[in-house]
Image 1 (cartoon, rainbow, N blue to C red):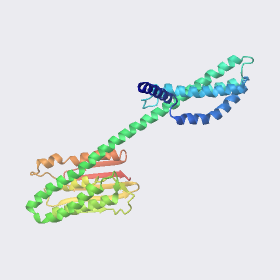
Image 2 (image 1 turned 180 degrees about the vertical axis):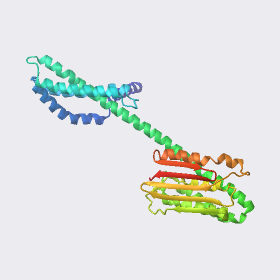
Image 3 (image 1 turned 135 degrees about the horizontal axis):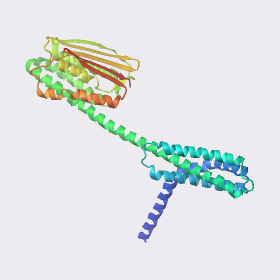
Image 4 (image 1 turned 90 degrees about the vertical axis):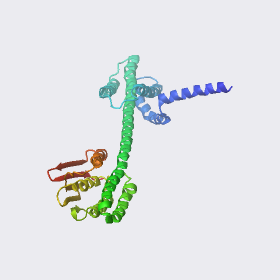
Length: 356
Protein backbone atom coordinates (compact mmCIF):
# COMPACT_ATOMS: atom_id res chain seq x y z
CA UNK A 1 0.00 0.00 0.00
CA UNK A 2 2.75 2.41 0.93
CA UNK A 3 4.63 1.69 -2.33
CA UNK A 4 1.46 2.29 -4.34
CA UNK A 5 0.86 5.55 -2.51
CA UNK A 6 4.44 6.64 -3.17
CA UNK A 7 4.11 5.85 -6.88
CA UNK A 8 0.82 7.77 -7.03
CA UNK A 9 2.43 10.78 -5.29
CA UNK A 10 5.39 10.65 -7.67
CA UNK A 11 3.07 10.64 -10.70
CA UNK A 12 1.11 13.55 -9.27
CA UNK A 13 4.34 15.49 -8.66
CA UNK A 14 5.43 14.88 -12.26
CA UNK A 15 2.07 16.10 -13.56
CA UNK A 16 2.21 19.18 -11.33
CA UNK A 17 5.76 20.01 -12.45
CA UNK A 18 4.71 19.56 -16.08
CA UNK A 19 1.84 22.02 -15.58
CA UNK A 20 4.19 24.48 -13.86
CA UNK A 21 6.64 24.09 -16.72
CA UNK A 22 3.92 24.88 -19.28
CA UNK A 23 2.01 27.64 -17.50
CA UNK A 24 4.80 28.98 -15.28
CA UNK A 25 4.08 30.35 -11.84
CA UNK A 26 0.47 30.38 -10.56
CA UNK A 27 0.66 34.16 -10.66
CA UNK A 28 0.81 33.99 -14.47
CA UNK A 29 -2.49 32.11 -14.58
CA UNK A 30 -4.09 34.65 -12.25
CA UNK A 31 -2.87 37.56 -14.39
CA UNK A 32 -4.12 35.79 -17.51
CA UNK A 33 -7.62 35.53 -16.03
CA UNK A 34 -7.61 39.28 -15.38
CA UNK A 35 -6.30 40.18 -18.84
CA UNK A 36 -8.70 37.74 -20.51
CA UNK A 37 -11.63 40.13 -19.96
CA UNK A 38 -10.42 42.95 -22.26
CA UNK A 39 -9.04 40.34 -24.70
CA UNK A 40 -12.49 38.74 -24.87
CA UNK A 41 -14.18 42.10 -25.58
CA UNK A 42 -11.71 42.89 -28.37
CA UNK A 43 -12.16 39.47 -29.99
CA UNK A 44 -15.95 39.74 -29.72
CA UNK A 45 -15.91 43.07 -31.52
CA UNK A 46 -13.70 41.56 -34.21
CA UNK A 47 -15.87 38.47 -34.89
CA UNK A 48 -18.93 40.73 -35.16
CA UNK A 49 -17.15 42.81 -37.77
CA UNK A 50 -16.45 39.75 -39.95
CA UNK A 51 -20.09 38.64 -39.58
CA UNK A 52 -19.53 35.39 -37.65
CA UNK A 53 -22.64 33.83 -36.13
CA UNK A 54 -22.67 33.03 -32.41
CA UNK A 55 -20.11 35.74 -31.79
CA UNK A 56 -20.03 35.21 -28.01
CA UNK A 57 -19.04 31.55 -28.34
CA UNK A 58 -16.47 32.44 -31.01
CA UNK A 59 -15.04 35.21 -28.80
CA UNK A 60 -14.78 32.84 -25.84
CA UNK A 61 -13.05 30.20 -27.97
CA UNK A 62 -10.74 32.88 -29.40
CA UNK A 63 -9.77 34.05 -25.91
CA UNK A 64 -9.01 30.49 -24.78
CA UNK A 65 -6.95 29.78 -27.89
CA UNK A 66 -5.11 33.08 -27.56
CA UNK A 67 -3.86 32.29 -24.07
CA UNK A 68 -3.14 28.66 -24.95
CA UNK A 69 -1.06 29.95 -27.85
CA UNK A 70 0.63 32.48 -25.58
CA UNK A 71 1.67 29.80 -23.07
CA UNK A 72 2.61 27.38 -25.88
CA UNK A 73 4.91 29.96 -27.45
CA UNK A 74 6.35 30.67 -24.02
CA UNK A 75 6.96 26.97 -23.39
CA UNK A 76 8.62 26.38 -26.78
CA UNK A 77 10.91 29.40 -26.31
CA UNK A 78 11.77 28.27 -22.77
CA UNK A 79 13.22 24.99 -24.06
CA UNK A 80 15.97 26.50 -26.23
CA UNK A 81 16.42 29.98 -24.72
CA UNK A 82 17.05 28.90 -21.12
CA UNK A 83 20.75 29.80 -21.30
CA UNK A 84 20.66 32.75 -23.68
CA UNK A 85 22.65 35.75 -22.41
CA UNK A 86 22.32 37.94 -25.50
CA UNK A 87 19.02 38.78 -27.17
CA UNK A 88 18.96 37.20 -30.69
CA UNK A 89 18.35 40.32 -32.79
CA UNK A 90 17.35 38.59 -36.01
CA UNK A 91 14.81 36.27 -34.37
CA UNK A 92 13.39 39.07 -32.20
CA UNK A 93 13.04 41.32 -35.24
CA UNK A 94 11.30 38.58 -37.23
CA UNK A 95 8.86 37.90 -34.38
CA UNK A 96 8.08 41.60 -33.90
CA UNK A 97 7.55 42.21 -37.64
CA UNK A 98 5.36 39.11 -38.00
CA UNK A 99 3.19 40.22 -35.05
CA UNK A 100 2.75 43.71 -36.53
CA UNK A 101 1.96 42.29 -40.00
CA UNK A 102 -0.59 39.85 -38.57
CA UNK A 103 -2.30 42.56 -36.52
CA UNK A 104 -2.45 44.81 -39.59
CA UNK A 105 -3.88 41.95 -41.63
CA UNK A 106 -6.61 41.31 -39.03
CA UNK A 107 -7.72 44.95 -39.20
CA UNK A 108 -7.62 44.89 -43.00
CA UNK A 109 -9.59 41.65 -43.11
CA UNK A 110 -12.16 43.05 -40.66
CA UNK A 111 -12.86 45.91 -43.11
CA UNK A 112 -12.86 43.74 -46.24
CA UNK A 113 -14.14 40.24 -45.38
CA UNK A 114 -15.07 37.86 -48.18
CA UNK A 115 -18.82 37.97 -48.67
CA UNK A 116 -20.53 34.64 -48.15
CA UNK A 117 -17.25 32.87 -47.30
CA UNK A 118 -17.60 32.24 -43.58
CA UNK A 119 -15.16 29.31 -43.41
CA UNK A 120 -12.47 31.11 -45.39
CA UNK A 121 -12.97 34.25 -43.28
CA UNK A 122 -12.43 32.18 -40.15
CA UNK A 123 -9.29 30.64 -41.64
CA UNK A 124 -7.90 34.02 -42.73
CA UNK A 125 -8.46 35.40 -39.24
CA UNK A 126 -7.61 32.42 -37.02
CA UNK A 127 -4.25 31.56 -38.58
CA UNK A 128 -2.69 35.03 -38.03
CA UNK A 129 -4.49 35.26 -34.68
CA UNK A 130 -2.89 32.00 -33.46
CA UNK A 131 0.49 33.07 -34.79
CA UNK A 132 0.25 36.37 -32.90
CA UNK A 133 -0.29 34.51 -29.63
CA UNK A 134 2.53 32.03 -30.31
CA UNK A 135 5.02 34.70 -31.40
CA UNK A 136 4.10 37.03 -28.55
CA UNK A 137 4.51 34.28 -25.95
CA UNK A 138 7.87 33.25 -27.41
CA UNK A 139 9.11 36.85 -27.58
CA UNK A 140 8.13 37.58 -23.98
CA UNK A 141 9.88 34.41 -22.74
CA UNK A 142 13.05 35.08 -24.75
CA UNK A 143 13.35 38.62 -23.40
CA UNK A 144 12.63 37.36 -19.87
CA UNK A 145 15.25 34.59 -20.06
CA UNK A 146 17.91 36.88 -21.50
CA UNK A 147 17.26 39.50 -18.82
CA UNK A 148 17.28 36.89 -16.05
CA UNK A 149 20.52 35.29 -17.30
CA UNK A 150 22.22 38.67 -17.62
CA UNK A 151 21.16 39.49 -14.06
CA UNK A 152 22.53 36.17 -12.77
CA UNK A 153 25.82 36.73 -14.60
CA UNK A 154 26.06 40.27 -13.22
CA UNK A 155 25.44 38.98 -9.68
CA UNK A 156 28.07 36.27 -10.14
CA UNK A 157 30.62 38.79 -11.42
CA UNK A 158 29.77 41.17 -8.58
CA UNK A 159 30.22 38.42 -5.99
CA UNK A 160 33.53 37.43 -7.57
CA UNK A 161 34.71 41.04 -7.66
CA UNK A 162 33.63 41.55 -4.06
CA UNK A 163 35.53 38.48 -2.86
CA UNK A 164 38.59 39.56 -4.84
CA UNK A 165 38.27 43.05 -3.39
CA UNK A 166 38.09 41.74 0.18
CA UNK A 167 41.16 39.62 -0.52
CA UNK A 168 43.09 42.63 -1.81
CA UNK A 169 41.94 44.76 1.10
CA UNK A 170 42.93 42.10 3.63
CA UNK A 171 46.45 42.09 2.19
CA UNK A 172 47.01 45.79 2.91
CA UNK A 173 47.40 45.61 6.68
CA UNK A 174 50.07 42.83 6.68
CA UNK A 175 51.94 44.68 3.93
CA UNK A 176 51.89 47.94 5.90
CA UNK A 177 52.81 46.16 9.14
CA UNK A 178 55.75 44.37 7.48
CA UNK A 179 57.20 47.60 6.12
CA UNK A 180 56.71 49.42 9.42
CA UNK A 181 58.29 46.68 11.55
CA UNK A 182 61.17 46.47 9.11
CA UNK A 183 61.83 50.20 9.59
CA UNK A 184 61.38 50.02 13.37
CA UNK A 185 63.91 47.20 13.56
CA UNK A 186 66.60 49.49 12.18
CA UNK A 187 65.60 52.27 14.60
CA UNK A 188 65.71 49.91 17.57
CA UNK A 189 69.44 49.55 16.93
CA UNK A 190 70.39 53.11 15.97
CA UNK A 191 67.75 55.34 17.60
CA UNK A 192 65.88 53.24 20.14
CA UNK A 193 64.48 56.18 22.17
CA UNK A 194 61.93 56.79 19.39
CA UNK A 195 60.43 53.30 19.70
CA UNK A 196 57.80 54.03 22.46
CA UNK A 197 56.27 56.97 20.53
CA UNK A 198 56.32 54.96 17.32
CA UNK A 199 54.58 52.02 18.95
CA UNK A 200 51.81 54.31 20.19
CA UNK A 201 51.28 55.76 16.71
CA UNK A 202 51.48 52.29 15.20
CA UNK A 203 48.66 51.04 17.45
CA UNK A 204 46.44 53.92 16.25
CA UNK A 205 47.22 53.15 12.61
CA UNK A 206 46.54 49.45 13.00
CA UNK A 207 43.25 50.11 14.84
CA UNK A 208 41.98 52.00 11.79
CA UNK A 209 43.26 49.53 9.19
CA UNK A 210 41.90 46.48 11.00
CA UNK A 211 38.62 47.71 12.54
CA UNK A 212 37.53 50.93 10.80
CA UNK A 213 38.58 50.28 7.19
CA UNK A 214 36.54 47.11 6.65
CA UNK A 215 33.83 48.71 4.49
CA UNK A 216 34.02 49.03 0.71
CA UNK A 217 33.94 52.83 1.05
CA UNK A 218 34.69 54.96 4.12
CA UNK A 219 34.26 58.71 4.80
CA UNK A 220 37.08 60.71 3.24
CA UNK A 221 37.53 62.62 6.51
CA UNK A 222 38.43 59.35 8.30
CA UNK A 223 40.93 58.48 5.60
CA UNK A 224 42.51 61.94 5.91
CA UNK A 225 42.80 61.48 9.67
CA UNK A 226 44.55 58.17 9.03
CA UNK A 227 46.93 59.84 6.56
CA UNK A 228 47.75 62.58 9.09
CA UNK A 229 48.50 59.95 11.74
CA UNK A 230 50.77 58.12 9.33
CA UNK A 231 52.66 61.32 8.49
CA UNK A 232 53.15 62.00 12.20
CA UNK A 233 54.49 58.48 12.55
CA UNK A 234 57.02 59.09 9.76
CA UNK A 235 58.04 62.46 11.21
CA UNK A 236 59.02 60.72 14.44
CA UNK A 237 60.82 57.95 12.58
CA UNK A 238 62.78 60.07 10.09
CA UNK A 239 63.38 63.15 12.23
CA UNK A 240 65.13 66.30 10.96
CA UNK A 241 66.09 64.79 7.65
CA UNK A 242 62.47 64.98 6.47
CA UNK A 243 61.28 68.05 4.55
CA UNK A 244 57.53 67.49 4.32
CA UNK A 245 55.14 69.87 2.55
CA UNK A 246 51.41 69.19 2.78
CA UNK A 247 48.30 70.82 1.42
CA UNK A 248 45.43 68.62 2.53
CA UNK A 249 41.90 69.98 2.43
CA UNK A 250 39.91 69.64 5.65
CA UNK A 251 36.83 67.58 4.84
CA UNK A 252 34.08 67.66 7.47
CA UNK A 253 31.02 66.09 5.82
CA UNK A 254 30.87 62.28 6.13
CA UNK A 255 28.93 61.89 2.86
CA UNK A 256 32.08 62.14 0.72
CA UNK A 257 33.54 58.64 0.65
CA UNK A 258 36.56 56.84 -0.74
CA UNK A 259 37.94 53.31 -0.83
CA UNK A 260 39.87 52.75 2.43
CA UNK A 261 43.68 52.72 2.49
CA UNK A 262 43.87 53.63 -1.19
CA UNK A 263 45.90 56.85 -1.00
CA UNK A 264 48.12 55.64 1.83
CA UNK A 265 49.85 53.19 -0.51
CA UNK A 266 51.31 56.06 -2.54
CA UNK A 267 52.23 58.02 0.59
CA UNK A 268 53.86 54.99 2.17
CA UNK A 269 55.88 54.39 -1.01
CA UNK A 270 56.94 58.05 -1.01
CA UNK A 271 58.38 57.76 2.50
CA UNK A 272 59.84 54.31 1.91
CA UNK A 273 61.70 55.14 -1.30
CA UNK A 274 62.68 58.73 -0.54
CA UNK A 275 64.90 57.61 2.34
CA UNK A 276 67.14 55.91 -0.24
CA UNK A 277 68.18 59.19 -1.85
CA UNK A 278 71.84 60.23 -1.54
CA UNK A 279 70.76 63.78 -0.67
CA UNK A 280 71.05 64.99 2.89
CA UNK A 281 67.33 65.81 3.02
CA UNK A 282 64.21 63.83 2.12
CA UNK A 283 61.71 65.89 0.12
CA UNK A 284 58.05 64.91 0.07
CA UNK A 285 55.11 67.03 -1.13
CA UNK A 286 51.50 65.81 -0.60
CA UNK A 287 48.34 67.54 -1.82
CA UNK A 288 44.73 66.43 -1.46
CA UNK A 289 41.55 68.33 -2.27
CA UNK A 290 38.02 67.94 -3.60
CA UNK A 291 36.92 69.57 -6.81
CA UNK A 292 33.42 69.22 -8.22
CA UNK A 293 32.56 65.53 -7.85
CA UNK A 294 36.21 64.45 -7.88
CA UNK A 295 38.98 63.83 -5.37
CA UNK A 296 42.37 65.12 -6.52
CA UNK A 297 45.52 63.64 -5.01
CA UNK A 298 49.17 64.49 -5.66
CA UNK A 299 52.43 63.10 -4.23
CA UNK A 300 55.96 64.13 -5.14
CA UNK A 301 59.02 62.66 -3.46
CA UNK A 302 62.75 62.41 -3.98
CA UNK A 303 64.09 58.91 -4.53
CA UNK A 304 67.34 57.02 -5.03
CA UNK A 305 68.94 53.60 -4.72
CA UNK A 306 70.60 52.53 -1.51
CA UNK A 307 73.37 50.00 -1.74
CA UNK A 308 72.40 48.30 1.49
CA UNK A 309 68.71 47.87 0.67
CA UNK A 310 67.66 44.37 1.62
CA UNK A 311 66.42 41.91 -0.94
CA UNK A 312 63.27 41.37 1.12
CA UNK A 313 62.25 45.00 0.69
CA UNK A 314 62.99 44.72 -3.03
CA UNK A 315 60.61 41.78 -3.32
CA UNK A 316 57.77 43.63 -1.59
CA UNK A 317 58.28 47.06 -3.12
CA UNK A 318 55.85 46.53 -6.01
CA UNK A 319 53.16 44.76 -3.99
CA UNK A 320 51.35 47.91 -2.84
CA UNK A 321 51.12 49.46 -6.29
CA UNK A 322 49.86 46.22 -7.87
CA UNK A 323 47.26 45.95 -5.12
CA UNK A 324 46.02 49.51 -5.50
CA UNK A 325 45.88 49.19 -9.31
CA UNK A 326 43.59 46.15 -9.03
CA UNK A 327 41.41 47.89 -6.44
CA UNK A 328 41.09 50.96 -8.66
CA UNK A 329 39.96 48.82 -11.59
CA UNK A 330 37.36 47.07 -9.40
CA UNK A 331 36.04 50.05 -7.44
CA UNK A 332 36.49 52.89 -9.92
CA UNK A 333 36.03 51.44 -13.42
CA UNK A 334 36.19 54.38 -15.88
CA UNK A 335 36.03 56.67 -12.83
CA UNK A 336 39.71 57.26 -12.13
CA UNK A 337 42.83 58.57 -13.81
CA UNK A 338 46.25 57.62 -12.47
CA UNK A 339 49.49 59.11 -13.78
CA UNK A 340 52.88 58.05 -12.40
CA UNK A 341 55.99 59.82 -13.66
CA UNK A 342 59.58 59.98 -12.53
CA UNK A 343 62.73 61.78 -13.54
CA UNK A 344 66.30 61.64 -12.25
CA UNK A 345 65.42 63.03 -8.82
CA UNK A 346 61.67 62.97 -8.17
CA UNK A 347 58.77 60.57 -8.33
CA UNK A 348 55.29 62.03 -9.09
CA UNK A 349 51.88 60.47 -8.58
CA UNK A 350 48.69 62.23 -9.75
CA UNK A 351 45.38 60.51 -9.04
CA UNK A 352 41.87 61.71 -9.81
CA UNK A 353 38.90 59.78 -8.41
CA UNK A 354 35.16 60.18 -8.68
CA UNK A 355 33.52 60.79 -5.30
CA UNK A 356 31.43 57.99 -3.82
